[in-house]
Length: 481
Image (tube, rainbow, N blue to C red; front, side):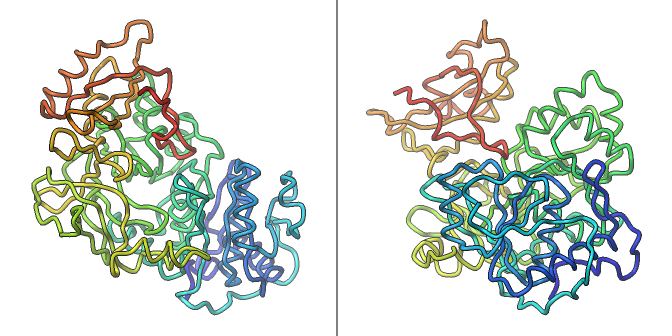
């Protein structure tokens, strides 16, 4: 089994990778990865210094061809976390660009330089067991040290093929993105996705609105991004007709890794005529659901399950939530060929993550009448039990973002002697000198949703804490109790 299209079999001169001035055809990629694969063949695991460069893509492709699991390393990882990942995964070498300056924590690990112009004998792809690990991707570690998620060749292939079916993704598509390459969004979807189809990926290196417009005007057909990127695009659309035209010319705009606020959905659709498609996945499951392109715009939903994915909602007592009413909240559980094989060296954590053969995502959602999924947050931080109601933070955040005086918003719950938990809104106002009043925001939410969903407390911030993927880090919010 191979995850990749026959890179140089039919159209060797077809573009495969573009990272600024670094450009490789499918034949050149096959050559560089084949040479590197010959150097690492037989190793147990390899770490990849995952900078946003063509060398990272070559390194991962080489590892896949050689049948060696790759461990992507975030170049911004701190000393303690890096030591944990290296100790846990025990790689035999680190793959890095010749110019990369590696931290002291990697000094004891043999280094293999990644060259784009491969010289020497290129080895053919090794036969690979579909159940063997292709990647070991470490989670963010929000509830303890990061865990290594074992993603098999089978899981990656199944998820990419399901997306290809849902999005009509072909070799003719040219994907544009600027996502980090140490995460499944940027690496699996953003690099391996186009290569599995035999198409092209253009990585911007660093996100810029101008870069997005340039590449879409120059033949890009798909754009992958996170809400922070789309928010910046939406902010620029009012004064940039060229940007609007470039987005309008794209076949598919996809947002993931966090919910895209309804307001940004609406601004982009109004200016371009294009609806941003949202999908839902996580490291352990890869992709679970997606909105289908071409359907009626429905901001806030992540669509129905992908082909091969079973999905259910479960109440706190373990019973299945059968209602398709858009209101009844339950934890999302999934099963299918897209699931990970387990956590590296953590059999107990793996067992705890499953309910039989169903994976407990920790996300809470409701289902619409057509079976589409609408996420309302994380069970640990976003499910608020107030006055006898189960309330998802996500819908309140969207309601707050619909207020013209709100730039950013996050919602949490905190203990309340009367309600059990009270709803707390953390707001970044558009005008820091004249923020909207607390009562005004509470009435705004109550009018859009329901009185019991209004925030009881509003706290104002200059910015919300976020990670590299744009997700709000609610546990990093200041303790205002």
